[in-house]
Length: 159
Length: 159
DNA sequence: GATACTCGGACCTTTCTTGTCCGCGAACTA
DNA sequence: TAGTTCGCGGACAAGAAAGGTCCGAGTATC
Image: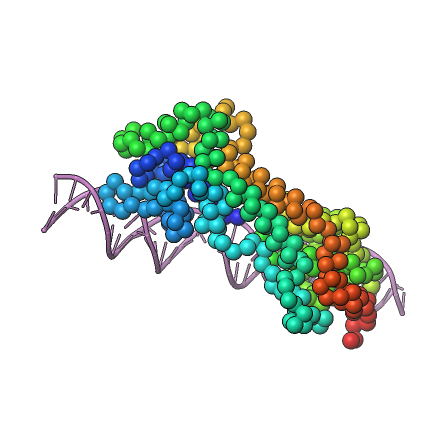
C-alpha cells in the first residue's frame, strides 16, 4: 500500500473544516510534507471526482460531495488504483500438468479465496466515511482542534 | 502484494498430494517458474515453520502440519511479512498545528479505520485453510487432478 | 569414503514507488 | 487589459523493493 493514502485521507478530513478552497501548498505546510508530491495525490483525488480544483487566485481544493458520502474506499481506490492487490497469473495453465483452458471456467480456488478476503477489506473501508473520521477526531482531540485548523487554513499566510 | 504469494500458495496445495519430500526444482518445473526464485519463497515458508526442508539426496520440502491447520494468513504473513500494509507516520504530530504527543494516547482515527479493515482481511484469510483449497481443486478439476500431480511429483525425472 | 543431490544465503538486475522540478493555462485583481 | 496567483500536467532523478541468478554448505545414498 502506498504511503500517499495516509496523506490523502488526512487532507480529506482537514478539508471538512473549510468551505472555501484550500491551496495544495497550504495543506502541505499544515502536515509538514512535500508540497510537490502531495499535489500528485490531490490530483488523483480530483481525477476520481472526490475533490474539485478551483483555479486562479484564491483557488485551491474543495470537497465535491458531503463528507458523509465519501468513503475510505473511494479515497484508497483513487490513490492506489482500482485494481486488486492480488493478481492471478493463471499458474494452473502452465507447466507439464497444465489444466486445459477449456476447464478453466471460473477463477482458480487460490484467486477466489484471496479475492474474497480483499472484498472483506473493501467492505470494511466502504463502511467508514470521511465524516466518521472527522467525528472521531473531535472525540479524540476535542472540537476545538478542527476549529483551529479551519481558522489556520482560511487565515492569512503571515501567521 | 508480492507475486510470490501466489506461487507459495500453489506449492502448499501441491505439497498436500505428496508425503515424501519434493525438491524445489520439481515444484518450479511443475509450475513453469524460475526455480532459483521459487526457492526464496520456499525458504520463507520454511523459516515460518510451515514447511520442513530435508537435505541431501532425495530431499526436498514437506508440510510440517496437517493441511487443515495451515491457513492462508500463515502463508501470506510468511511471504509478505507480518507487518501491516498501512503504516501510520503520525502525521498529526507534525506541522504548525501538531497535536502534542501527550494527547496521542491511542492510534489516530485514520490508522484505526485502516487497521480495522486490515483485520477484516486477515480474518477472512485465517478462515480458509490449505485443505479447503485442495478440496476446491478437487471440485473444480476432479479428484484425478491432484492424483496425477502426486504421481508426477514422486515419479522419476525422465518422464 | 566418494559422490551426487539437496537447501541456504549472498549477490546482482530490473521495476516501481517516492520525491522534485519547471512550463503552461486559467482565473481573479487592479 | 496587464499582472499576479494558483492548479495542472509531464519530464526527470533518487531510493527502495521486487524479481532473478549464482555458488558454497550439508547430507543421504552408493
